[in-house]
Length: 379
Image (cartoon, rainbow, N blue to C red; front, side, top):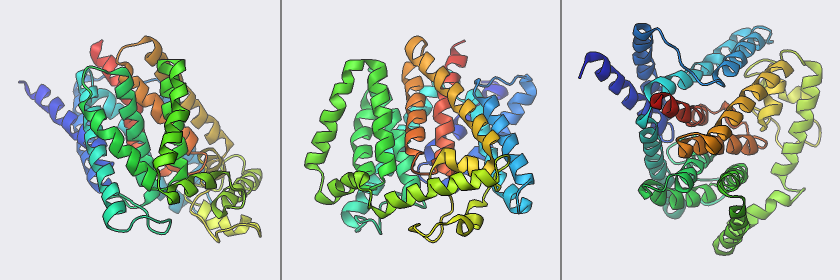
């Protein structure tokens, strides 16, 4: 094996391990990501090529608009420091180069394997350690139950996609899906529940429209066997007097007022928590929040309407290309996993600012890039 091939192999294992580890521990995932980036830079310098999926350029534009928002922020230094997360956007070219061809499916297998382990950790917390109420919910080994439920949602969508579109080997999804379903349920994170249902529904409809009929039957079965506490939590989605529901509607109003006052550049990255009390109405439930628990609204309020338009452009290009590959292209299982990630993020993101979580963002960008990497390797 030549030095170049050996270096490429090292880069692949690093980026695959980074994506898988993002479901377990952020710091370890970021260290692996950084090492993979070094390998990628060396390879890119030698090859003088830069192959990326089409959605990467809108993502870069979103990063540029974010930096402009930070420059016009009320506290430019704090906002620019918060922009360090933009480095994670390099996940797209790293995965596109280092996980090409058959390595893309191997990367997905690694994600599902570690995702199943992470799910079992959460189930163990629920069963043995009293993480069974709204004040103490399973977090796996991550920092927050919202982050944990988000990455479980993404991994679950990928596992279901692999079941539906890749029948040759079922061992990973057959093991992972039940564990992930239970783990997601016990987090009691309703946004991730709804996002997962939407993602699975989109996968079923894409595979065969009639399969959608199985979804309400599955939901009814889950509701029948679920503990009373989880059933009550599910039905609380429709309760207008639920405090969380009320606070979500309040934050939508707040977002509208913030955008009206700061339409072009928003209040600046990481500044929602600073201006929150200035816009907080009397009927708000929580005295403060770090963000507005809605991805489009938070982007518009924090970074401005131009940033929201560019972000929508990024999502539209990614969804279009992934859907096209599922319907017409090769590596349909990988494309379906990416499509499920987009649908899940969008739907769950109406109730939680998941796009701002580093663990979620790393896994999300990796999943939507793997189909491109597989196709590029085949070419």
